Image (tube, rainbow, N blue to C red; front, side, top):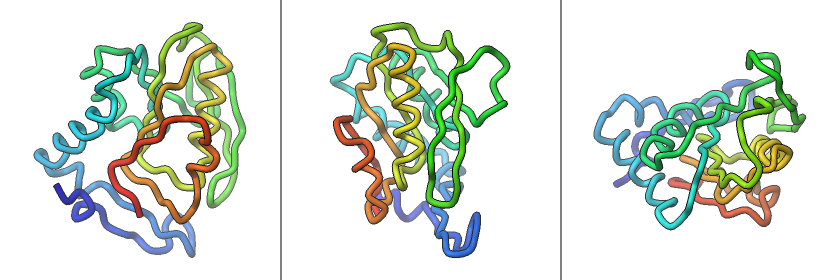
Length: 170
């Protein structure tokens, strides 16, 4: 399926000079949404996964669907101050600023196999921070998967040593 036909570019969003990859056309089409979820799931068929970590905020779209299909738990990673319980945090840089991510301290048990999902791999800062959070809690990252990878930003370099899968590459 040509998933790229369902992704539109929004120029100068969220700030001038940034071209945002808008996945809402893909999400609103039930057949395309299902096929995208199936394709992301197919990246994981030979992996043992205990939990799927979804990254705030668009990572929350596919991560719970993947968790349900994998019969795994879902864990949200959110921006600082958005989770209600005790957290650990990790600061990181992204293509248009800096941020802090948090995860609940009881979200992952030592030795659990973790799939990290986000919508876009850009500079790799977000995904790298999430990997660090998972490892702080004793989890093992078995794969990072993405709907879109912006290869020209070289984000995969920050995830050296982790298995990376992406449905679309630009």
